[in-house]
Length: 273
Image (cartoon, rainbow, N blue to C red):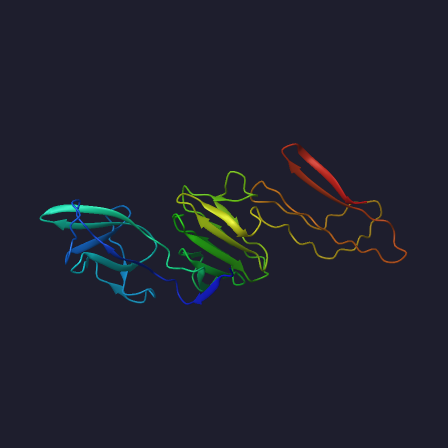
């Protein structure tokens, strides 16, 4: 099923309506509940709706039947409330806002948000690094979270995704995992899914990066190898190499080879004799 798109600023997620009950199963009606971040001490920011335009009061009251509803960013939160003078705490997860494969599309340019963008789960970020380097700091890799990144410019600037401390990005070409992922080419994209600890590449880019493009180069010196493109990957992996060779009518013979270093040392492979 193709992804549906929605546009606008990053969206908050809706928690609830969810019943808050005591350990004996009694609903906690008309009771103020304070929402903390996962550390149980930092007050969470709540919003009046998904648009995140206006903040809401924290604590928030349950209704008559003990149902609690609020908007906040996806993540893990601690709910704190008091029943008969006895303090209670519950840990809950606020799921990403999207549903039915919808994405929240956000256009980014390197000069519009500074050098460090902070995407949220459910975001499809359109990266345009034409004005300078763009560095994204990924959120926590919450279970079920997902992010999509696409690069639109063809400049030499970088568009880098950095995983949070203690988290890596896993993919077929990233070995045991990498703390960062680079979008180097115009049109390159990558989709990441969180497993509760790390992110996984589930679509788009090829992990360690793409080979550099070599411009059209005339070979003018006989019997001499001439480098037309070189590339240093961020991490070990599998890479595709291609070349287009044009020999004018009546021209001399030519060959193409690739030199690289792997676990076996320096290697040379002739791909066109």
